[in-house]
Length: 242
Length: 229
Image (tube, rainbow over all chains, first blue to last red; front, side, top):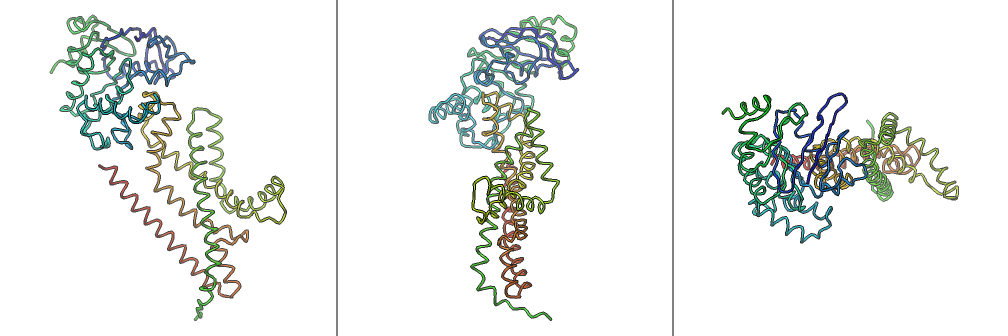
């Protein structure tokens, strides 16, 4: 489904990604973790072309992301993405947030788009808030709407960029619950997150990054059981200490 | 003590109203054109295509560095001849109003584009990323996501600029075009009551602009209250 092959990226002389290679098969859930500044968010943003990269290739569902001939907007409409800061459109109601891309990008008619939006809103448990504006919802609720908004496009896979790190602790679980459910239904997912409980529960593989390189790419049991690299061992020891 | 005599005003009201219509026409056309052209200039200035950005920056800096009076004067001197030769008009056709409108519109769009550029930049970058991630093109992201938010933040500034513009339209008097100020001046000159007429004109400008700026302030308060929740 997603094939990342020798991807490197630099801003000027600063190397952000160095020869990153990994694959995500259909239905797999991959958790990407690592210290801040390790390039994990950049890597996931390369997958749908939000961040350009200088060398290597990324193939998503047979389409090359780096190819200048690729119509990126078309590809992105099929790859869902959830951001750290939700990025709902604050000038639109929740319903409009859910239906605008369905109408303007996929060309669905208004009724169809609204019905789909409501169905997914119900699924994330927020149907009662359909007519509200994003500013009237809590962070956790906004993030669930953001997930529903991405799902409205019937994505072939979902990318999560630190979806819970801007949330108050008591709201993290309501978002993780939605993500766990999604994973159990067989959605292909690539998640940048520090929620190791989530990784333990649903991840097939864990990728550990440091200084722009993929240091570890292993099954979750191998990763949590006995990380091969010293750097990953230190990282795990630190975040699992308490 | 100067003897005030206001008696020439009531009879002159229809003529003054004609002048007010010209002032409003220039203001409205310059605001509409200024916002449209200003938006395009702002988008060019923010575009990744360098020549577009240079053009827009050059345009804005040029018009912001020249006094409005001089821009208008050049337009009165040059544009009427151009229009006449271009459209093959009778040399006696009055194109002063058209050239005033064009002059104001081109001048104001430089100021509007700076307001709009700041408005566009005030929208978080993540909004464009989110719109793009949903498959929107850059143009769709701008039109559906960025500009509506930018304009909502900008409306008070745009209206304030429009109020300043309304006052500045009085500068067209130097082309002898009878806008409100020009009309008041003509009547006062004719009846030897210049002081009264100019006081009256000043009072009307004050009343309109003060009322408008109060409305803008009220709108801004409402906007801030809305954003806070």
